[in-house]
Length: 255
Image 1 (cartoon, one colour):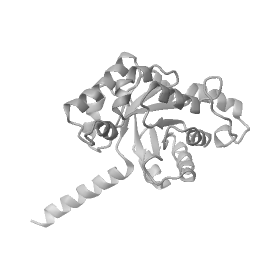
Image 2 (tube, helix red, strand yellow; image 1 turned 180 degrees about the horizontal axis):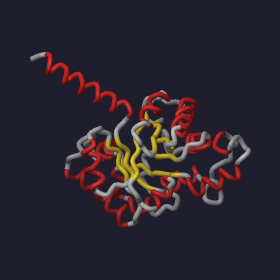
Image 3 (cartoon, rainbow, N blue to C red; image 1 turned 60 degrees about the horizontal axis):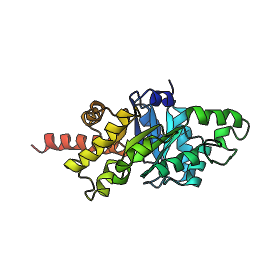
Image 4 (cartoon, rainbow, N blue to C red; image 1 turned 180 degrees about the vertical axis):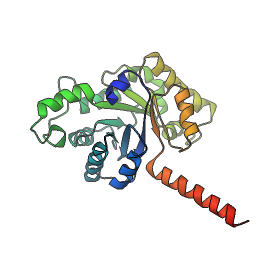
């Protein structure tokens, strides 16, 4: 079953986050069994050429390649999709207008306003009609909910045709409320819960990026009803394993 169909069915799907621009890290992450990997070009030094190579590597490992674009902007979305990405995560979708803009930039007329580029996605122009059909049937567009304005306008955002799901960005959401990183505050929890409740009411996938590598924290979000879940970050897995191993070695040898 395709990722698009799982999102339509609101079924659980788990991926992870790529912030190191090295194909080897993608290949290692692919061994874990993730269904999709997100290449982050908003908060990393990954450039577009590097992103294209990572898209190839992810897809060559049988995983869907999503890209968290740098902004809700026409040219970057168009270029990433022309490279052949399976979908996009659009940051700072704060209103119905923002959601409509993302869809317009990603979909061809008459649904959207995307211009045609005969590049990798369309098999360099030899398969444009096939690709155009694929865009309508399989392209994934996820709205990132990471501002209190988005929480306040969540119903209108969810009504935009072409938005396949949401993913909450907890750091920026709490930051927009004046408390960056303070996820345990009651008002921040209430804002998160409102998004989850409205997604459930409209049967639209609600997502969350659980950056912690502790699987118990991912399970909490599964139990809350999230179905589009990003688990960890590539270098967090490496960091946490290294720190844990060294701490155990030091504990044994410093007695």
